[in-house]
Length: 111
Length: 116
Image 1 (cartoon, each protein chain N blue to C red):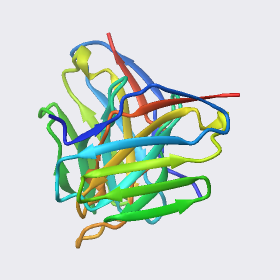
Image 2 (image 1 turned 90 degrees about the vertical axis):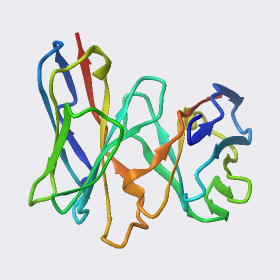
Image 3 (image 1 turned 135 degrees about the vertical axis):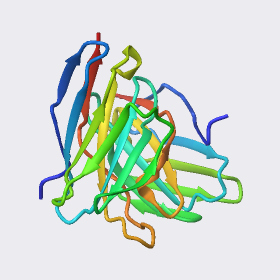
């Protein structure tokens, strides 16, 4: 059983759709929760970074953390073809240098 | 500002050989972490270095080693390469401090290693 499980996808949606990406985890020590976007042949790019439970919004992106359920989500509103990428959730205790990642969900947004 | 830079971008090696990968962190970042990403999977933690000291090691064999230099750049070394070492090797830097870190990782674009 992996510490972090991510909905595997792949996910294909029409342009303008709302996308929901999800991860569950088992380690209660996790306090920091991140979402990264990774384009083909590139390194992961930080999208969202949250601490403990709650919501955080940045433009079209909203991250939600529910520590009681050990469940995190990333919502993308008004999805664009440029959002087509693999999305990785990651989490850590006090040291983000040792983050644990999910295996990613590949998203395709069709024009 | 320059991001995390890694070299080389691609590398092809033969089984049994040795490889050295290099990383320069974002200016001001003193912590460097190394991750291995196999195709179709998420990054797996290999090492973290902070101010030239190893701060953590993942579940990798002793064939993997690393070091950090006074300018905070870092090298990852892999000896006796196996076919299974073929992967994207990612370097990331962060504002880690001795009390822990509230700073997320910022990644380079990786070195793609192919072992034949």
